[in-house]
Image (tube, rainbow, N blue to C red; front, side, top):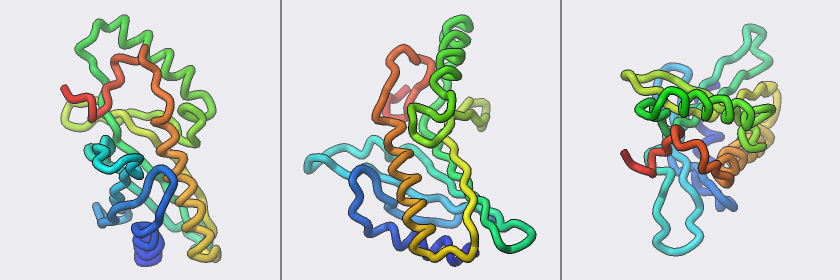
Length: 170
């Protein structure tokens, strides 16, 4: 199944998307692929503000061999805990409100993962596919999920100052 997913994701590298495209696919760990997603430049010379983001695709085949669980985790920033605790707490409550159903109507939900003492901000989605589906059907659903990931960044809440995006710098 890993080879099949590699093939499907690599076939997306040359797509001409509306907003975002898969730039590369690499094996990160057993059962984990890392894909590089870049925004479609609106003008020649646009900066790639997604360049420090990391996107991981984790997959497992169910024991019956008929279903595939596929999870996408997009690491996009960190929680700035140097702000006063009350500010961070209030912003976390606001973020939970904005995370109801999905984060900014994107199909993803907001999460956090600790890594080397830093609380990394993630967007996550879970998918279940039937292994009998065609590669094209799976590919189209993955294209939709990548488009939805990009749409999560189309809306920005400036009140969430504790949520630092990598392109903002330190």
